[in-house]
Image 1 (cartoon, rainbow, N blue to C red):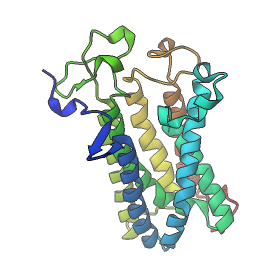
Image 2: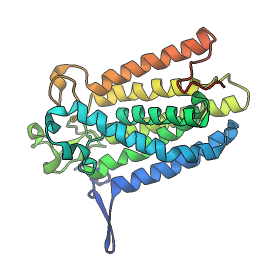
Image 3: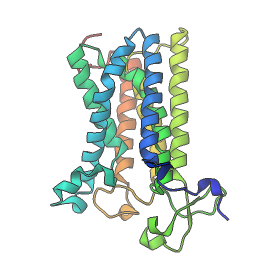
Image 4: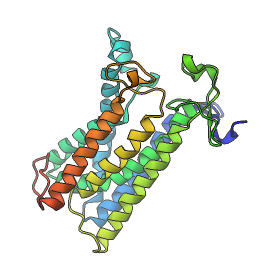
Length: 283
């Protein structure tokens, strides 16, 4: 029998007359916890913590808009001609890579507005982002979504028939890919904090932007293998769940981000040069 621990109690939390969606509760928790961590790291980097608080609403808005646009563009066949449904984010349909793009653009605009160098601020944000991703992924558990291939492993996840793909209706238990990514993101956060701590103690030369490059590489490495297990990937040309046997969109983007992060580290430590500031602000 499947472990009861990995059987979703449902997407909603009932508190007397109030009904809350677990996903919303987890996202709100991730924002609060992430803000607390980012402010603490900013203080250690001699960055005004209030800058992080001021950025937060723009960052969240940019991430939500980016996540939705990214998803709709890749699922255009589903949304073509349904303009109202494109805006109905409460019906589901967001993508983390779109959130990262939207959040980065919002941060660039904020840094340009506030005359704040981009890379030092991004470096204190990304450990909090990784921690927030680890928390937010549990929303997939409560929604019985974003799961992987069928499995009989001890940590298998039970999925209700209504949430299973048609070709897997006879299968009851699947890989809990939400759990894999949550644990991976916790590991990424721990790695970034370790590097940050070593740099704070003078044991590591952590140049502006280096921590961001490490995040791109570390997060993306995990996403490449976890995405290979998922049954609901975004595909560029073919249809899910297997995308015609080719790479999924998240894998392609992750490989690109690994390349970008690696080039960034080479530029910083191989060429010993400063990363260009996309906000156009000198450090």
